[in-house]
Length: 185
Image 1 (cartoon, rainbow, N blue to C red):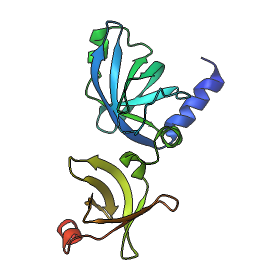
Image 2: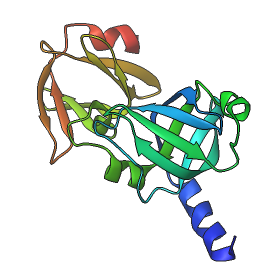
Image 3: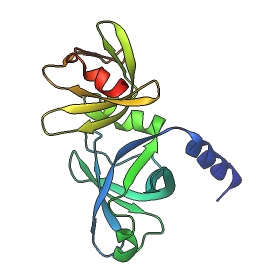
């Protein structure tokens, strides 16, 4: 590898990363993996050189993409450099996969729930916080928001979600009385 390439990779590694999904299965005998993601569209990760695999909480290791082929809207078959057998692929199964913020912004569909990361949550014009994580549940979406030093889970469903302004990146909610107090007291 050239020094310039290593420098560019190092710069990317210092950028904020976004969790996009999980490695859920292997296929074939040459280390291929199935990545289940929430990008909201078929993705071949064109232009993405590296994905990060969270081996232990808070520790992301870069893996270089050898190739990627969309399987469905929620899954992509991927092959990492250096993962050349089913056994080595099994070592990273069920691990979270992350990508750098600017690549994520290019890859995510605008209507995907994961695209709400970084949006500001407000209630009656009052700032609650910024979405740091999106958790999809069967009948609703939960947005993790840091309020001061505490994490608050804001439910987004038909009774709480008032509007989403995708241009200003604002989520307007109407929360049940006392919901924030549960977290903040």
